[in-house]
Amino acid sequence: MKKYLIIAGSLIVGAAVIWAILWNAGRQEVVDRMDRELKALAASGTHIEYQDRIIGGFPFGYSVTLKEVVAEIPAAQSTYFLPEIVTSAELPDFD
Image 1: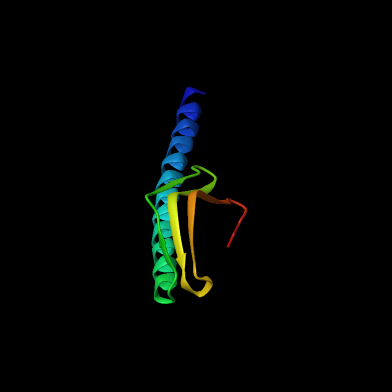
Image 2 (image 1 turned 30 degrees about the horizontal axis):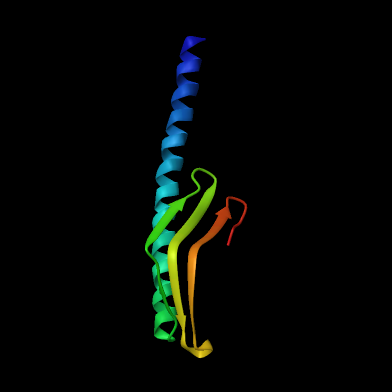
């Protein structure tokens, strides 16, 4: 009986480690995709700057928080100052 508990415990710990590795790989994809989108916006004339980017949401999703955001939108002849922008995606959100 003890042998089965050790095996089950090892499987659970192993699955948790694999999930953490996959989540961190997905976190890097979130960072890369966000950087690409900001470059595309800059190429079209809209400049967005922020002081800090915090990515959390482990283990069942991703949450991105941008602090002290400044968005310059020439088409609207406007500059927006936002203290914080928060967005999230949960595990069931496939896209």
